Image (cartoon, rainbow, N blue to C red; front, side, top):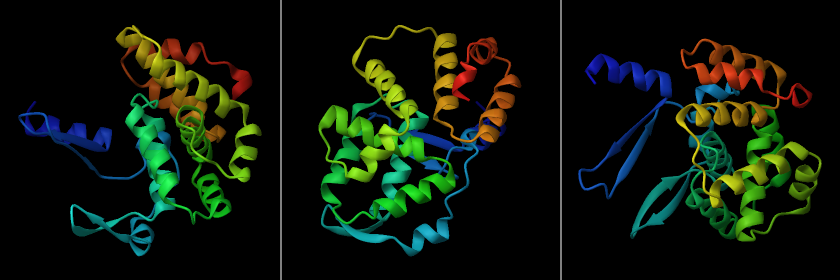
Length: 216
């Protein structure tokens, strides 16, 4: 891959992964916090910066996201990748265990404004279902009120713990449908479909045709 192709890939995917030669350390460099394909309202970095907190890492003080912001970012990231790694769910559970002062009403309201409330609830649902994380009543109520979150949670659980031999085209189709279902706003769903229609991969067309329109 030449330099021009590298730049095009970074602009398209919003991130670039670096791995050491011995594969012991990996680093993802992101241009934006929220993936472009979700077409959500952006998280303003200046706002996040004002809420940064100092934490101890290997005896050194480093800046980290405020727990509420970090929880939102982790849930969007896990949802983007269909929660394919148990470690990401462990991150959610550990963050909840070590963060007792989360303003849940404010966090849910912020997620709703951005357009990622379902992604937030999905990450919390998985942390509760798989690792027994403790959730406040307001989160339980929101999960119960959104059957799609529960359905997605069961699907992610099956993908994580049951063998999956899907072909590449099958994976593209599944990811398109899952991302579509995670979106809450009809305009985001329409934009997502149009983006997929422009792709050359035939699997995307199949995915669009198999969407249950009753979920839109």
